[in-house]
Length: 182
Length: 132
Image (cartoon, rainbow over all chains, first blue to last red; front, top):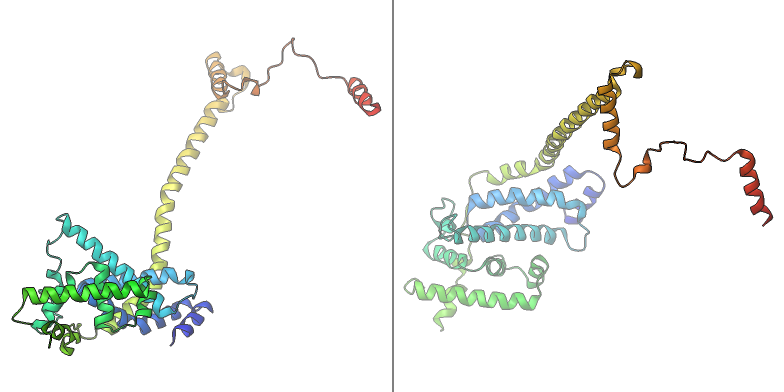
């Protein structure tokens, strides 16, 4: 079902079925999107529950000024960024493990990448949350800047600049710390 | 070739390194699909939880008012049978209800207060304004 069909179903009053179709259409894509940002399966699983609860409660207010897909991704990205910021703060105040990057790949039983990919994930995890989201969406998801702009609420120019800085930071980190690998 | 350019341009680095437990997405869809029902249940529970203390407070205040009313009215006894102590208590209770800034709320008639105008006087008063 397309986004328009889901919305039409929702507005016709069949809200639960419309939500079910929304889950069917977007849950897997959202999972990979969130997983790329958190790097962790358990956190992603928890976050998805929160994200879809928020989507359910926000649906009545959706004005249709963007595509359903973009709107859903915007909620998911914002919730994930809030989660990452809170986790970072907790680490800063010593409430959690001081190394937030440790949860990214070690010891994640659902990480199947090779060593180079693991090191890349570590490097990306060092980026500030918002910059990490930009890097992930452009580098891994190959999302067009226009779509990223609608999701992040930032101009295309600002996103290009942010991606460029993130790209250079990740490269420098890998070359400095793992020169033999890269 | 610039070595720096080689690193992130490698196609293998862009490959998805993550996996999920078996049948995860089917279970995920089931779980997420149940959210509307769960939220409806949770809202009902919340409103029940919120209303209990309100009901308790309301019942308590109603009980206090009932007791107060019973004491105030002297349990339905006639004025003659009411003891001076109770009478003075009632006067005290009434006095306690009168705001000190608005003593005229309870009008007490005495010999100094002019009586209500007679009907004839009222008609005369109105007539003078009709002719005006």
